Image (cartoon, rainbow, N blue to C red; front, side):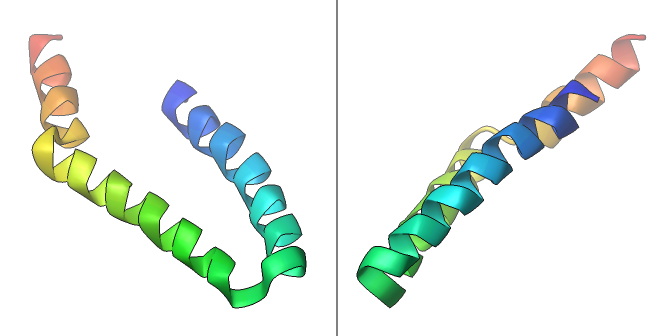
Amino acid sequence: MAFLSAIWVCYVPGAARETASFLKIGMRTLFLAIIGMAIGIVTDLVKPLSIEEEREQSER
């Protein structure tokens, strides 16, 4: 539940920030979102969260 809450806590301010940025500089703000997504993908490839969750589940 905490993980899902953390996603929403990051999503809402990010959406508001991107909306405000879009009004100021237009389509170039999409590059910020794409860079953020790329960082998330690379992070998941290097250290996947699913493996840690599986380890925690198997220890219970």
